[in-house]
Length: 612
Image (cartoon, rainbow, N blue to C red; front, top):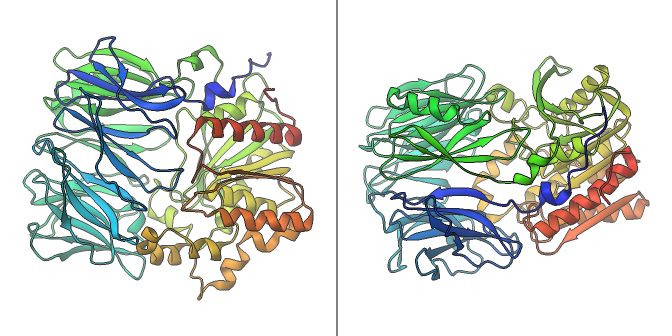
């Protein structure tokens, strides 16, 4: 079978043609993201019409996070500078195009707390304006732009939750043991009280999701007295809980609630793929009709205030994302667009779920994407490690998996211990195992693929970003005999300096970091022993290292330290520093520069194909 044509990097990693559609509250208009002179901006037009035009005019990083105001007259979006993650909030009048900056403050990060259709001219946001470590809640009047304080952070709150009267009535407070307390109050002026506590064992897969319509209950993801996070309803006055949905092995992933009653209508679990369970019989026929529109995994991204039109998006491993407008009265779907229609002209590879037993017997899940036309034996292989590490890979279109498979590599993606979604036992098995058993799972994945004769043991690379970048450095330093080369994107090289330089607004998470990664004083030797910087002399494979100069999470110094050590040891390496990027590469020209270098690097060391 001949190899398929090369998919241009521009098609895989350039800007989408269109993305992220949203519908106005009354359904008369739609918006989406699309490039203007190569920069993503918000476009708006009549629903079903051809009159779309850009209503934002960003010329630098592009806009990625936006939403309609409930007044139907404004679109709001967040933007930072150079990847520094100091998000500012802007409002755009969809008729005039006039833009207002609602939070014109230097070195301040905005977080959206929430808004409600019954308060169309208001929104609640969090800002660390008074103390860089702490986000207080502010009420924003969208008409006047006036900001007023709505909740003051007592010093340990990491997240806020409003009720449907637009009152801040719940908060997540960090505890010294790495757990969290759920605080509530009866009204905006009342004192806070502890409602429940999540121990450190439960803290990473438990959280409040929202209030009931009457404000008397909370919906939670809750793993207390269970392994996996269940969807439960908690009565605030009595503390009684009722389990709404649960799976013994997998955590709740997402919910969809009624826009008026706020009752849970369906719930999703990610097993091998995302699976929705309908809880509300009144939408069962609608959901069945949506499922028939496309073979991909779906989600309902937006709804009109009248709830008569849904926007549905579908994710498919072998094709672009597809978006539809679904008319509930007629149960008819209207195709809107593909986000990257050019992909349809190329051969894409299926993403196949895998599982294997780690050396201690723990079952580990992941995905394998085989190169079309290259068979399934003795393939050059790239172990592509996800970041987080408290995240997971999932089924669907993955541009890196398709890029690697198209270039002739087997792409292995492993949800190593410490990944989310598989219950707290699996999640907590990664505690204090950075560079330890978490890395053993990656090594065992390579050995599994080699034993299956899928992978050529002499041609395996380790590749990843953030924690995945750290894992790539660990692979180069601790198991260099297993890998032919390594690619590190914004990965920490020294766990001591990494923990010491986290952003100030992560300070409430420090107790959790100390428990799950290690304490810089109590566990100094552990952290030193798990830091690739301290084992540079063991590296004997080439490295490619890429870093954003403005990264607030993994500072530039993390890459600079190990690059300096590699230079001193005369170890083969390449270093790419992007002066206008942060934790990852938002600008398409920077993404394409990185992937061009990475493709050339992998081709040189593993022998895959390269787009010149």
